[in-house]
Image (cartoon, rainbow, N blue to C red; front, side):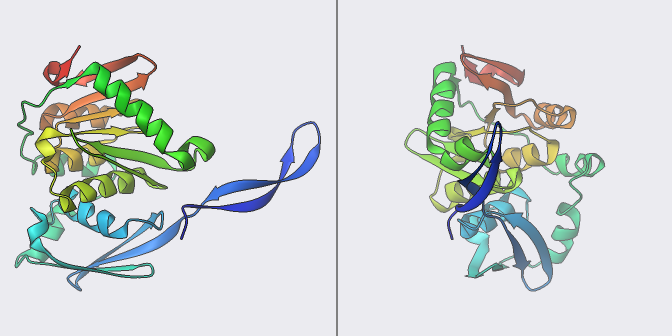
Amino acid sequence: MRMYREVDAIRVDTEKMKVAERVVNDMEVHLKINETVSQRFTTSPDALREFATGYLLGEGLVESVDDIISVEIRENMVDVRIDLEDFDIRSELVMGSDCFGGWRHRVEMVEPVESDFQVHKDDIFSAFQRMVKSAVVWRTTGGTHVAALVTEDDFMIFEDVSRHVAVDKAIGSGAINGVDFSESFIVYSGRMPADMLIKVARVGVPIIASNAAPTSSGYEAAAETGLTMLGFVRGKRFNIYSHPERIII
């Protein structure tokens, strides 16, 4: 299924005219883990294996891809089996609310990001330019969010109707391809709440940069987890909100 489809619309400006416009495809995905826990997500229809892998890692339900026994995809059902005897206990601890009050206990479960990785500011701007050029659906419709995992050799970019799932897919792709997360960074479109930054820190990515602003909870989460957070990446400027030592000016 494509990420978008053409539909007929009535354009209203100085006159009415029928035009073909793009709308972004979304679908409800049912993620089942070890037959005991299930979650439902609204997501774009592509890269569901990467999504499931990134979600499991980012939520702390597995520590590596080696803990994932299988991922079976049947239309909108993603059936995952993981090698974890205490899964039921861990899932109760980790899978919490996305609301502001739900992230505090989760940040306490994250090991601080320890990475000496540094990025020059010009590489941040270059990555954003590449993201804008590559994210066709986002650029033309504004109906998706975009996340790209950037390494020395790879640029793994995903668009999704959910900002969290876009990040999950980028993380999952990196894990599947054996990326050293401590030597990578993420560029991203949209605001940065705490629960999303926690999953980035949990897998050990040291830097995230967005064209939008952080939330106050995101700022606190980044500071506490050792994550370098950049916001308002626009043109030739950005703000560094936490742990600036990783950015070469």
